[in-house]
Length: 231
Length: 226
View 1 (tube, rainbow over the protein chains, first blue to last red):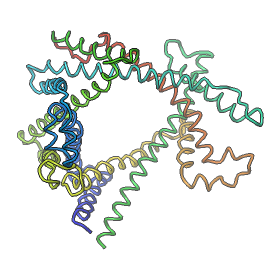
View 2 (cartoon, chains in turn cyan, purple):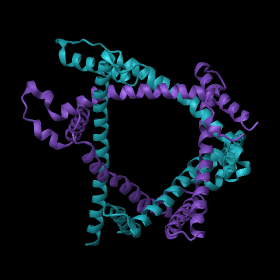
View 3 (cartoon, rainbow over the protein chains, first blue to last red):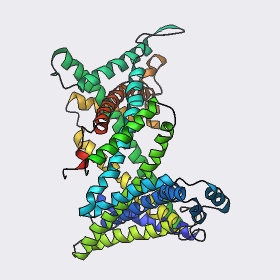
View 4 (spheres, rainbow over the protein chains, first blue to last red):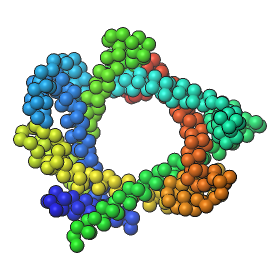
């Protein structure tokens, strides 16, 4: 076993036990692991962002010869250095630096400019994206035949499923409509909508539990491998 | 100027991306991908801002001799050590060349031995809390709670071998009650109906909020100061 594997088993194993110690009660070992996780994960995501976004898309784009210092190999360096400069990437760099003015109270208002760009970009992309994929496409997918016929003739199961789907979507939407009081037929339909939503929440809950348990099994397997590597 | 220019930036950027949908001629199609890169670059600076805050908060705790100052030191040490090791590609190829997360680098070692075990254990810990919370919440007192519980149970059991062994003996006419089949049907129809209604509702909310932001009706992101 290499040094890296041994180190990973021991450090990872001890940190795993420290986190699980919280199941007994809050204690210094858990706090240690928790605080270490905050620091390491912040630095991890910063490093990833630095090398995958800032260096190639900003530094390298503004001044391509700089990629000679950072490229993974000489062939890649030659290709990247030959690219033409995208000098206009100075603009997001300036906006990014303006974001840091939040740390200086007197100049903090300048951070509104990059924030305005982020908001404008998110609004512009989300408006069309959600309109196309989550609104129009979902309505289109709900406009399906209520009576299903196949080669054998009338398909009772398919008809029932499709009718349930259409009624389920309509009744759930009615439940979310709060401009009219939920009384009479409207209230009854909204009640069906709640049942449909409960099935959806139950399915989501089931999937969440399964995902967490599979992670737990993964950690238990890791601990087992760690103990196995010692003996 | 402190409020008008940000409003103008939001309007121009938002409208440019909307126009790009309707006018597929230069420079609009290129604008979408270019703005996406700008967004990523600004987001990296937001990471720096977050790092600045993290350092300020924990340095403050240490200098004020807070009772948890040792843990603040742990956070700062973990942060600065990982950052230096990652940015300078310690243990990797000479200089700053090579992949920052290549095999053999210290950053990769920290990723494997600290980051991955801690993140997956943190999330797996939720399995216990979900179990205890569901025990308290899911006592089938109402019709709605019963429906949720039954759906969750069928989905959970239907995705495991237990679901198969419990009902594989059912005769052909009752095969629709076979738990894996029932689980797949719940996912494909009633669950889809509920999810679809939620998606349509969320989409309507996002579309109206986006329009309000682009047109400057919604200005809360600018804060209250002049």
